[in-house]
Length: 227
Image (cartoon, rainbow, N blue to C red):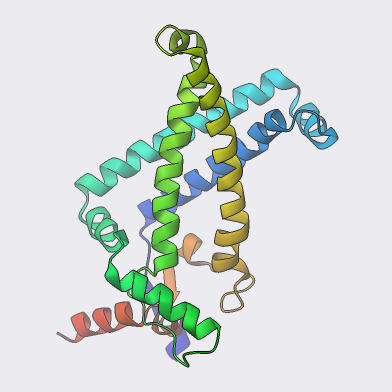
């Protein structure tokens, strides 16, 4: 019966934001990597499947506008909605997160028999959120400079344009690796949720999973309900 009880973890607005972000990210990677690795046969095949470089560039800009749009919306969501402000506050790292990280390392290497007890978000989720925020800022800023290159060259030196190209390219590679190696494992390939956590689709988490992965949040919710 415990498995049949669910709690809301993410609102509809949060799930839509995530889906738009995910879609824009995938499209940006598919349309951007062929430029960085232009000499690769795989890149040429991808570009040809899209209909050529002109179509690729147009799709890349559409995905960029999606990313900008969801970032702007999220900023207003955090500033002007209670749910947004509350969750953003929970995302701010603190001393406990450092202790939790050390405690998890101790658990992994066998020096402790107990995992740290996490609240609404653990230190991994907080790191991913802040990394995505910083990465999106860098990608949007450098992307706009490269998009409007002629206007940017009127006020920026050539060397800074070259640096912008390098930063934009390798920040994209870093983001791609972080998503594939870090995020996909913890959200989908982790044995605790394999083959996929459905929270990002349904917004709901089972009582068992909440108790196991976010015990402090569970106790807070149950305590609030009982009061």
